[in-house]
Length: 156
Image 1 (cartoon, one colour):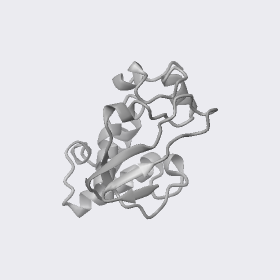
Image 2: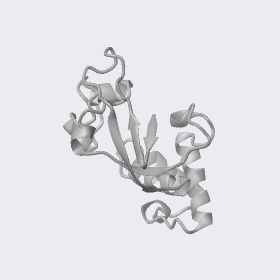
Image 3: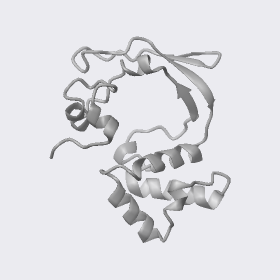
């Protein structure tokens, strides 16, 4: 990665065997700084309505005696809420434990909102993971699968 004056330039071109339509030098524009608390809140708010994750996430909320509102209407200025959301993401996806979805994820991260154009996004490939390969019809293109935009899961 190369950063200059709020613009990050990533060479996202994977080997041809992984994606036949690689992004070429995707330019991400830094929109504003963020925080771990905001990332966690957005992550959980995005997962809650997803068919794959709603049931286990609502069960964790119920087990903790925490109202769904801390996910749907997060107050980032409330340290107690932020800690509850962090614990929820840890239990739900392994955040901060080097496990689950966050296996190998770095501990020190500078969070920021970044922007890309729709045209740039259309050239980005999903991770080479069976769920995304199937969902994208094998193309792995982020913009290709109608089912992904609709939040549908691939057939079992």
